[in-house]
Amino acid sequence: MQRVERAKEQEVVELRGKLEAAQGDVRGQLKTKDDKISEILEELASISALYSEAKEQVEQAKNDERELEELREMKSDIERKDKQQAAIIEHQAKRLEELEKLYRDEQVARKRAFNTMEDMKGKIRVFCRVRPILPFEFEKGQTFALNLPDELTVTHPWKDEKKHREYGFDQVFPPGCSQDQVFEDTRHLVQSAVDGYNVCIFAYGQTGSGKTFTIYGNEREPGLTPRGVSELFKIINRDSGKYTFSVTCFMLELYQDSLMDLLLPPQPKGRGGQVADLPKLDIKKDPKGLVTVAGATIVETLY
Image 1 (tube, rainbow, N blue to C red):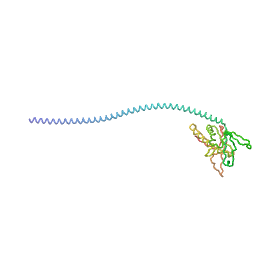
Image 2 (image 1 turned 180 degrees about the vertical axis):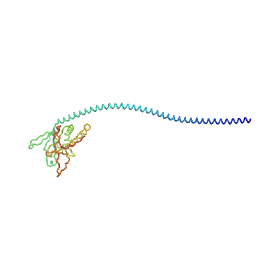
Image 3 (image 1 turned 60 degrees about the vertical axis):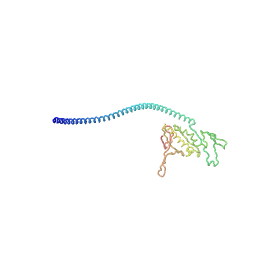
Image 4 (image 1 turned 135 degrees about the vertical axis):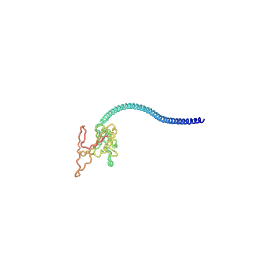
């Protein structure tokens, strides 16, 4: 009996040893499996992240493709509109060219008609302006010696007032007329000058008859010259978008049969306080037959 019990005990010990060994193997296998599962889970998480990123990239690619298609459509639409605009611009350019030609033709016709009308009035027109009685003349009881029957005629007594002499003019300006009224009858000559025609206005009369006042006037009542210059530059500003203008000017005075250059700068004095000889002014005709003054100081500007 004792042998049997010892044998059983020995067998139990052996079986326990085998069981513990088997349990150790199982634990090792479980740890290996757990480690493998962890690796697989990590790989799965990485693959899942890559999948999400790839999915986003696919969505972005789809959006980019849609935007690209929209851009292609916009480009096609712009190209189509550009062709339409180009056709419209070409048509408008041709139309503008036609209108410019018509305008130039109309300008030429207008100039011819305008200056023909001016010529019909007479290439040389003589106006008469009667100045008013001055205060000191009025105090002396002086009265007008002239009569103005109409706007074209002047008469005055002759031979002890038994007869009257009559003179006809293109226009007679009575004493009460203003500087502006006088200029209105010469304004159109400025346009003729711009159109390329020669124009000359001069005043003739005895001392005290009002020549200087009519031609130059004063600051409050400018005369023909400042008004004419102002009108000239109004026309230039009006047409500066269509033409380029060159304005030249010289100013002379005829005094005791000698020409004087009024734009000549002051001349330096030599020894003995004598002013150097002034440049000689010579009246000539240029190749076009226009009268010029050689040696005159000329001021020029472009517009």
